[in-house]
Length: 152
Image 1 (cartoon, helix red, strand yellow):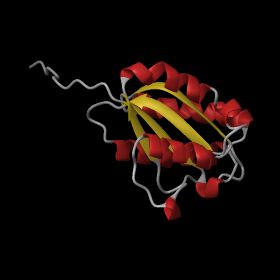
Image 2 (cartoon, rainbow, N blue to C red; image 1 turned 90 degrees about the vertical axis):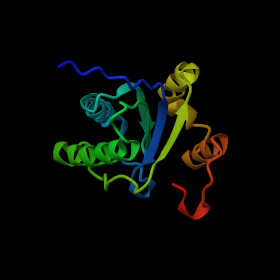
Image 3 (cartoon, rainbow, N blue to C red; image 1 turned 180 degrees about the horizontal axis):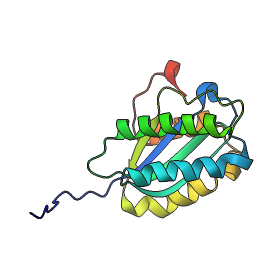
């Protein structure tokens, strides 16, 4: 019996989260190993990764979610498995885990190329702007109601 899947989606997510306490523990020399690992997690979940990037205290993931995967479960899986990977591989000696929450923002397919460039240039971008300012801009641009006490 052939299973015809009739679910089609085109939703691009930008997922953003920080290290616990926003500690700058994701040192550049091992970041690519972390990004490769997270890309494999996404691949195993049948999600299409467009770009992953970040700096010492946070990462951005631009991805399309497979229709059978919930955003919350995906983020939980990424955080749990990458934390274990970081600790077992001793990638970042002072890494103490990921923050409890995350930000997730949706985009149209037309925004994809700009998003990819934005994430690709995180190092340069954060020479001029703090993560907090960047995050506030994302929340406001997407009309997300937030409580300043719980900002990343």
